[in-house]
Length: 401
Image (tube, rainbow, N blue to C red):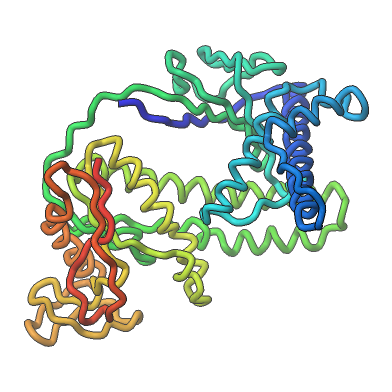
């Protein structure tokens, strides 16, 4: 099967190449902001009682940018034409995601926002220890034998984070049809104390990447606030703060990838709750810890890795009382957040509340086969609005891979 995958690694550019990267970033940012302004002007013009005008597309905007290069945008000739062209395509995609309810309204990009990236297409060549980019040339890689060379290359994205430059290759490669792993179906309960508790007893520890560096981050943030605005010392302090945040993000991402890869490779069916992180972080006492755990990213990685390795991901109904239900007798009791041990008043079983919840989720795997028809197509069960106490186990979504 053909899959789309991204390979990301760090670059080792020279000072001249760093300057070229910043020029490309400036071109992409200018084109994006120019296109957003033109689209908003067209929208306001269409609100007036005059003949309606067409909202410019990425192709129309790119033609306008090319026409202005000879007049007042001559500095854009120093960069590849792909940088502004791909930025305008990103703008069209951003509006499409907004109108379909997948993202917020596009905003203007600022050079001080910390987001520095641009995408290129065309003559990109990957060699051992180097990558050749249009108008930039050969750039050294800090990691060898990682980027693929004999694949269909779709695009290349160069980005900066905390003073370091990275390259990401979007490729389309052919994979063998995955063989489903052997073993039993499991349920996975996500939490704060433990990142994931599996029904077979496996516990994935939570690295708490942000909380472990909270004191250092406060110290670095205090240093930034005490420096004079616009000074070089303030810029140095901001870079130190950015590197600390980047370190926490790298540790969190590494823990998520290791946990999700282990589950997708070894478990044939994985049952997880269909969580709503945006609603969960409204609890101001747990918002920081919940954001540090990244439940949404955990489930997102499980979705595409299950397709890679042949396993299946089943999302349980958000109203299914996995924490309140006893995994032994099926009784239901109220469970406040402070109570970490589940003690059933009916059968007397005592166990960790997360392990009890994961076992209840694992029981849904037996009924997951009923949600597939004879052709193996995806089928969604109706989602009710009944109380979690009276609700029977149900499956609202099944990812068939």
